[in-house]
Image 1 (cartoon, rainbow, N blue to C red):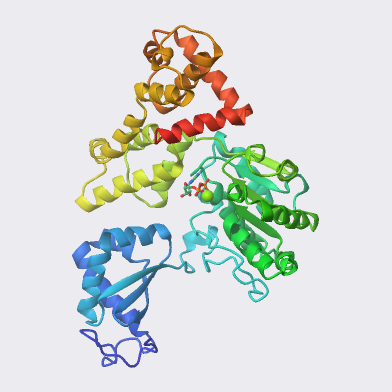
Image 2 (cartoon, rainbow, N blue to C red):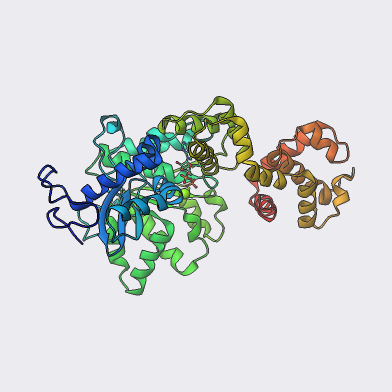
Length: 477
Ligand code: ADP
Ligand code: MG
């Protein structure tokens, strides 16, 4: 790799010959400046400022320029939209360059406005004694901080608990472990990263390690193989806050499960703060021994509920403010009403809408949004036809589709019918009376009752909950 800023005179760029260029500037930086000048002209000032300014040219390796970008979001965006413009401009300035490699690398930000956000200096959560704890942590996303987490009814308990843990200078008795659970894309990982950032900023002496359950298992199995589980436990001894994400993936792997949770217990006994997440509650973690499940629920169990319209709208508003873009209210409202599955999809939709407007150089409008998201919404609509729901539910419970419309009250048909009504309510935007009509002219109170019954069951009866989830998956919903 070239370095030092004194040697190279490739392509059109000729830094060293000019006495006016800063003498200590790296070749890569000077090259990148020249590339930026080109790109500002080609792509415009806005695109440059939003997407290209945060990029740094790290090195040139053969014919490949390695560019680092601060976040995954920007990386993906740049990759999808500006790859070829970047290669063009780079190769015009330095003819060796034929390709680019985009990597995520958070950098300290001198911007005073960002002083409130933990400085994303390093991606690894690994600690000063990296030798003692190699590969222990996983990357932290610099965007996943508390100030970017929008709090609403569905997530207020989880947020409050996470915040208390992050603020504390020791393990919190009532919250150890903190068990966060909720469906995909509802902010579990975001909250865990936020704890890590916060502790690093406010309690730098506390060691925080965040990792996925698979990583935890992987290291544990490695330790088992090398007959060194003691060293494994030892590794975590110097950690003050240990966070393990998505522990549902541990269930079922019997032989290691036992040892794994012994280790886990030992950590709690050593007064380490543990934060665990899963996509379901401790009681619903199938394939994990009862003893262990109840142990997991010993501290505080905080459920993140599915989002409400208000929360979705709030999240969109905050995303828009963060990116300093203008999106009309009706578009935000439309997105918040129609994209209900999870926050990740909601963000994805907003990104698409903004990108399209940006590309066309036009303002974001409701019409444009509806057209752009047609496919996405159509597939939502398709998966929410009441007829489909009736068919899938009947199939699943091996009853006749006509039983869905019949007045029969025996549990064997009434329960499936209630499940179908419930799914019609949550997966379509049909009103209760409309749903009632599709079920053989039932009254809206019957539908309401069914929805309530099934909602209760879902909270109290893991088996029925499984059934409902399976049906939803079968429908691709
Ligand atoms: P999970 O781990 O529960 O599957 P994530 O934490 O990965 O979900 O969240 C998915 C995406 O949604 C992330 O980009 C996250 O920042 C965003 N997100 C989720 N909940 C919120 C919230 N309450 N406020 C702001 N962003 C959120
Ligand atoms: Mg997650």
